[in-house]
Length: 124
Image (tube, rainbow, N blue to C red; front, side, top):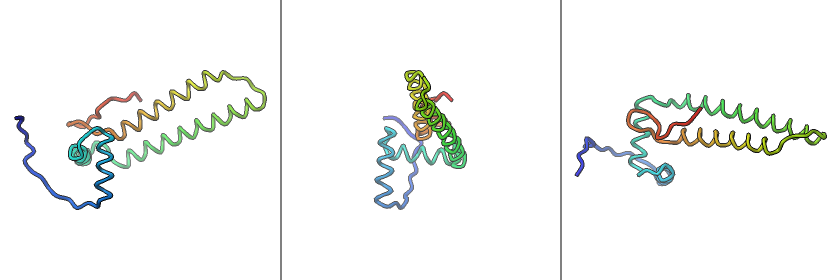
């Protein structure tokens, strides 16, 4: 049997809705609820990801997505006016943007390992 230094526990009050949300989030992360909660507490106590930092990253991502949307509208306007384009290249570029967004969101929700790193590294 493996030994552990986790000899202490504590109780918190939570609503049924909170418990259900936490259970769903833990399942989505592929972790037991206690492990998921412990990773959140470890992140908060280590100061590895301040909520304001995450909010700044999300705002920057929204600006970038907005710029992509503006570019897409300009392309559509040009095509509707009789311009020519390579639709395969546009679709490939949009696929790359969506992959980057998916990776960012997965990284933002991934629990951290002991020591503060994410489970997987995301190319930035």
